[in-house]
Image 1 (spheres, rainbow, N blue to C red):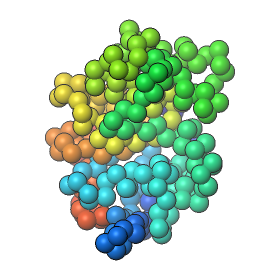
Image 2 (cartoon, helix red, strand yellow):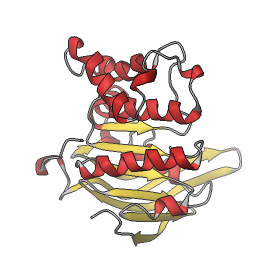
Image 3 (cartoon, helix red, strand yellow):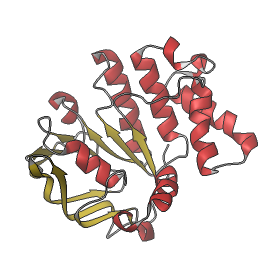
Length: 243
């Protein structure tokens, strides 16, 4: 379902290569260290979940990988690109083509229909001929069982339906990497299971997925689970569910 990443686009076969990343924030109370010397490698077609208590650095790690945040020191290589070295304009273009980002709170544009929300990603990145975008967007909505709701506005949809549309949007440009921050956090268990199964299918098709979750049972269904605490990776557990 997703594109395979060729060897030359990876750093030593890794789609994600985070090297000794430190991220600090200056606050009224002093310097807050969100990430301390984090190393993380994720191979092509791997499904990795990131768990840990609130405030342990999970979202900061995700933001550094997707270029939303810049590390204070260290290097972030994604699909062969030195993300930490890009300027804002370059980051936006790179992200649109390389990473599908799924947020906990959907972030759909309320005035656009489901299919228009999915097409917008293609428009913004200039991906695919304009004549093909509608059909491609419909295909992505069909994958998440939302084709029947293509012409509905987000506010008329349930939380699970909105998240499904958001995932279709993340898939719009066929990115080699999907990064999801608590994508099932607002969903009931049945819908969460559907979303997770979709991710598993995508991994089988060669897409690389990193997913932050507070649900340990879901997390263990991935190939590898990374546990964070106090801005560090404290444990990595091979779960081995998908082969």
